[in-house]
Length: 114
Image (cartoon, rainbow, N blue to C red; front, side):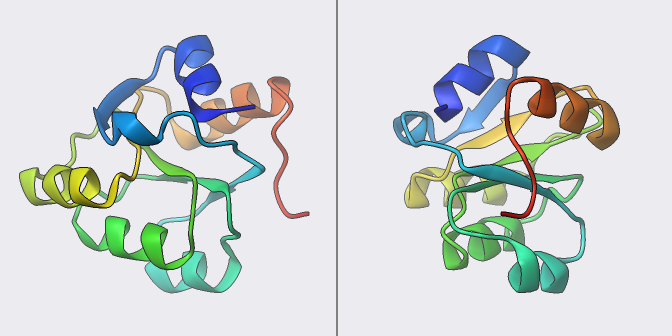
């Protein structure tokens, strides 16, 4: 499954990184502590978070994550959007909370730790 499939099926907002939407997604990870994501996020995971600051992009790029979904209708800062575009990192958004979003991703076939 690719990010574009997920965006279409869950009607996610694309804040930045449209050029990376063809990337395959292997799983998902939910976390709001950067150190936790750095320790447990895996390559090609989709990161679900409420964080909106530029460090989100740095961690996602460091871990080679497929993309980031910001939940609860939060909007990323301008710096975050700019850095996401520069890194070609898909930065997505939804009004759903993390629990509801993870359930919908699970229904689509995504799983957590592999």
